[in-house]
Length: 357
Image (cartoon, rainbow, N blue to C red; front, side, top):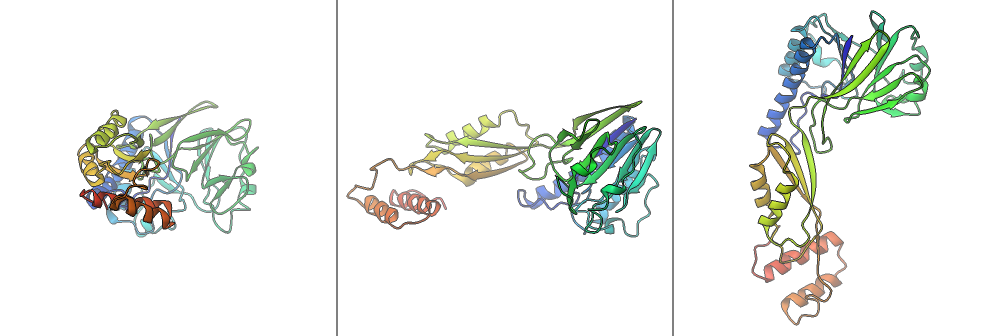
């Protein structure tokens, strides 16, 4: 028997903090299509169950287009069961309100529900304010079965409405604890006979979700259970730190950034963070760099953590406007970031250069 463990798909995410409105709309559509592709993959590869461990949706207000996409994808493959556990972003069942659900879409509730497939039992329950302390004691699983349990929440040593209390699940005859909530893949030992796994999100949405994303494929043969991570995202997010120390021209900085991301496909999203130090003579035209790099990747974000470097004695002792300006700013006691910004703008202006704001 084969089972897909996925979670944190977050359909209808806005995603406009890192993307233009047009790019965000495209990514939102791509997330819907990735879910549909997952359903197709399940049918084509003999998957019996797609286990969704929470946060299928991102908010309570879900578009009719998204709901229709989900229901159509599920209904298109009646031979595959879709077991859906709501997470902390799936705050209500409003997404499916008034809709006729396909028979192969089965929703968990706030009490343990069990689905049997031969000797495989899949149990799940939604953690709430009222059940998070009592829920663990009511879980009943036979050691004769291959038991899979699904919950949504942060791993913890104590119970809570959004916390999965791992000590309370040890010794419960769990072979595989399918978790949702964390957006990166993680597989750990639960007890002597079982493991727990965060499958991560199906698609990265922001630059805090870099790296490969996908689902976990569980393969059960008799009483033997094996699991492996399967990359499945359409696009990957990458982040690079680029040291610009010693670089004085924008074109050289741009070259260093492209070299750092040389192996990244054009379809992916990239964040560059400039670090190291620069001098007032450094030409780092951030809008120009962003424009050039946007033509190389699907989306680019540029952050600047580089620090202004004034060599000891430079300008401070000059009998000049630059020297007087530098001494005034250094004596003003400004916070470091503000001081550097004022120094850089002033020295650029006094040199007749365009001021980078």
